[in-house]
Image 1 (cartoon, one colour):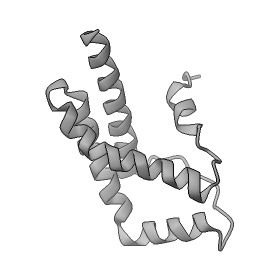
Image 2 (image 1 turned 180 degrees about the horizontal axis):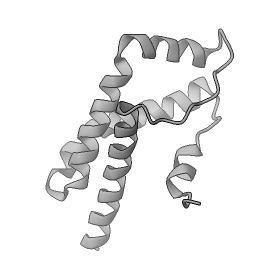
Image 3 (image 1 turned 30 degrees about the horizontal axis):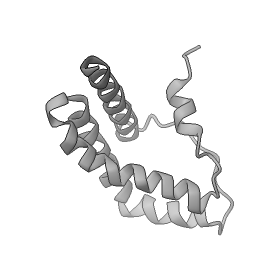
Image 4 (image 1 turned 90 degrees about the horizontal axis):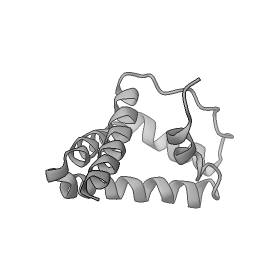
Length: 112
């Protein structure tokens, strides 16, 4: 059981590391622009120019690295917990549930 826990922790950590590194290297796939004056557009308009997204992605990177290491997993979850809650809150309250299941689908999709 300990091996399974370590494997799941490593996969979760590496997913957060991969997506944060993709952000810093500007390799994120382009998303369609949300409708102007929508709550999503206003929310992302505040995140982009302020540099707050870089702070969130830094927390993801640090948390992902710490979660991937079994001895520091609890500290890593301390960094990732608020990030995960904010991702859920964004999808529940701003997009009214749209895209809520996309991250698990992206993580489980096989390469072509």
